Image (cartoon, rainbow, N blue to C red):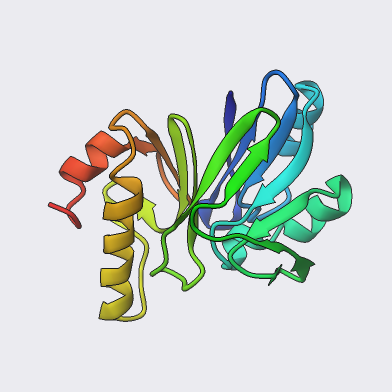
Length: 186
């Protein structure tokens, strides 16, 4: 499994390429801006971008989506049927996402946005703005905050402790660290 991080200029958002080493198929997790470094990486590694997974519909995670769709004709997966002007396949909790021989699982993590989703592969989970290293994404109400914390406890913190958490902004972490030391859960 290939996992490559890209730091974007827009609000220092993170974007990730996840790829199958055997089949050379790849998925992009969040597309806040089109980044030529992503294009070069895909080309240099001989990867085919077949899917784009959007964790939530905020411009710093979707702004580059139209350009990626135009260039790669990749299927967009999201909690909505349209995002950033692009048609998307609406996915929900428990759905499987195949990238070559890799199988990811969609996890519901609403709160920061109503349609918030995370994507888990063995050893890795991509949480967008639901969970950060040492923090969580902002919410607009107490109800949304509690919903988000509950979803993280149920769907992220139940993953194996060594699972790497790749977030929408800032550094990655692990389930062991966040479940034990993140002040929103202690």
